[in-house]
Image 1 (cartoon, helix red, strand yellow):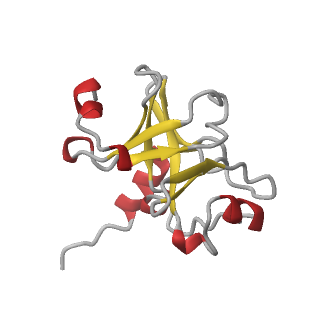
Image 2 (image 1 turned 30 degrees about the vertical axis):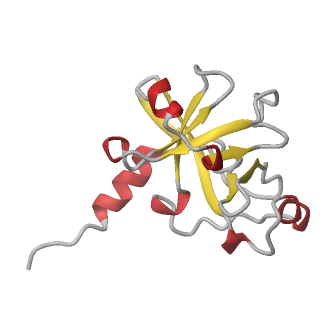
Length: 148
């Protein structure tokens, strides 16, 4: 797994700040977004304040192409952007009981220019809290090109 050595190599400018923290982890504000070839397609969110705190992330459009979260003007303003197009959008992945799910209800929004991030809850959406990733993989396989 990703260890402290990778964190020590990090430049201060690469730190992502969550002013409100993540839901359930409000006391931890500083994270590193780490994308390593050996862990693709995942990006890792690593706490710089608690080494045991690390989360696998996916870009939701990589497995849910029509994902269009409705982000409030207040959320955009708090991240210093004018539109969703100025953000990187991730979802937390949970692994358990042999299943992997993605939280589409609580995306993580990152302003890469200002290094600010926020987890939001899409209260007016029908996106699931636990979207089964095997379902997404199965649908991609069904759409795979065929010979001939």
